[in-house]
Amino acid sequence: MANIVLKDAYVMINAVDLSDHVKSVTLNYKAELLDDTAMGDSGRSRIAGLLDWDADIEFYQDYAASNVDATLFPLVGAAAFAVKIQGVSGTISATNPQYQGNGVLESYQPVGGSVGDNAMTPCKIMGGDGSVLVRDVTP
Image (cartoon, rainbow, N blue to C red):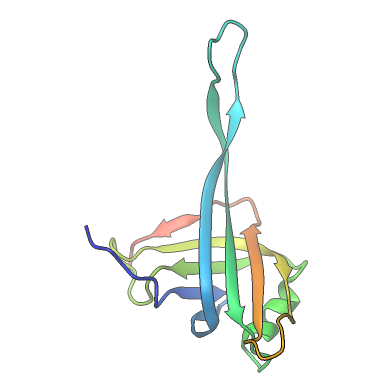
């Protein structure tokens, strides 16, 4: 088993590659678990419901055209947009999958930090148009 060090992740939001501004990225994929425990059961029983995903991304802020603020600010409250995330940039393959989905921007912090700190901006993207997260391994 090969271990990887997360140092070259790929993050594309609404067709803009923001990878060079990413400090951290976490992609969560889950299924709602619905309780279907009935009378007479001696333990809980659950079935999988709808699939869901979200991403927490922390960026180094950049107010220049086609960068972080220009990309994220107009997406708050807007329609779903394309999101692509890979643990390692480069060609998509069986050992370097790309996760793709359409998301909505739940929150974005345009300004934050203390004196002398890097200007950081966290954001949260949630699955947004009813489609599921796709794991693509085809170059």
